[in-house]
Length: 294
Length: 317
Figure 1 (tube, each protein chain N blue to C red):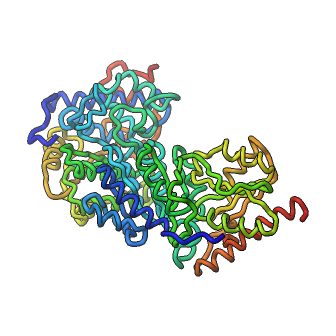
Figure 2 (figure 1 turned 30 degrees about the horizontal axis):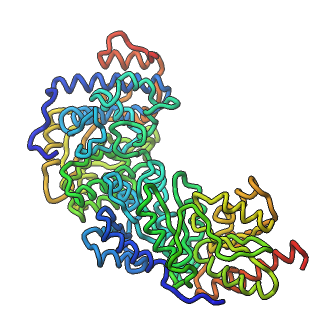
Figure 3 (figure 1 turned 180 degrees about the vertical axis):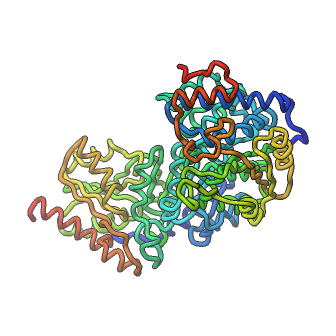
């Protein structure tokens, strides 16, 4: 709901520690499942933790509460990051993260709104979650409902034509109840090569993303997607902007938090070995080195 | 007997959804910049505040409709069948069919007669594609009477649905007291020689063809199948049992639509000799309606010819 303030909740220091814990859950879940994605979830998780603990007006015990703020992870392959934030916020037990991608699990490889509490729209075929969010924001205006719809996109996802279809329509209807957050981690799954094939170029460079959204009539913001304080401040400003939809280009690092995963496209969807896992847990301050567990 | 001419199904759609809009404020219409063709403009005229122009951008339109449906709105999405079913198929699959959202997809200009447009706009594999889609209900009304009722039924029943709407004026088959029932067939002509299953506006042509054939001593039991999915298995089996021969006729490819559905059903429940009449493995072309129907075997005369050939082949007369 449109406050002028962030919701009451953990302070920045606490959020940073929650994000660290979330990274441990993410890495462990992927190792346990022996599949899924890591690079994108690790670039998105600081923002997800900040959103779920301080921004989104939601009720974990009543996930379908009609007046809740909506959140859609349109970059659906980062589902484990969304599930981790939802679990830590209390939508379902954190232990359930161990069932990620398992048969009969509520935590499907890509988000499925029919089974997971808190998932407001299915996603995974890139671009679609965004158009669903445009529809929710449009419907909220039609019904005079006072909640905000947040959609997180990947930067590579902005390759999809449907993104720009939706961007046009959202501007046309002045959907200032819609906030898009682009996880601009500068790498996509494979991408374009540079001078040699080991170098992968970003989907958009410099100010290209900001310029494009701005040209579509959206109010644009930029932030460091790993700085919790800056995230809270920027998201509030985007939410409170009136007269047009708002987009935040969040500068992030793919694989953030695990040194050998950072900025390496190969960690888009690789599963760590036991040795790599131990290093990851050590770096994330998970003392015993963890192991895949379960 | 020649049927009297009625309104095109697109007009029936526009008028029906505008009428429903008076009764139910949750009904909204989304248009992909074709409202003056699909006749969604009739709704805009009546309810401008609930008419959403979504531009020439069908993928987003179908996705946005899904988002609106999560809030309890009942979106009728209006565009040509080729764009709803082919262009925007991923949005339909992932955001409408998989989550079973209450979106009503209206495919205008479906079939062979799309107003001199040619193969890009002709869509006669729509029923096959939408029938294969999980959770999707597929409806093909025969005339304006049935179309008006089908639109009402779509608004009243929760869940994703596709309705086939056609462009040209269409003969009236049904009396005003006819009642369309979702998932039910209706016998439009009692006969004893062979059972003919038809759907959509083609049923009006088959009905007239049956009159021609009756004069030649071929007595057709004509079953109209307005709901392709869910299919009225009992109705189709009992009609096949009645005569022991089955023909399907549709303004649609013979692959995977009515013909496919009836063949699947009868082969499992009551195998009989059967013949599928409809469009061949092709994309069609431009041309005047009467010439297209003649060339592609769907005119009254060519429908009669197709059925006659089958009967001769089977019973040798």
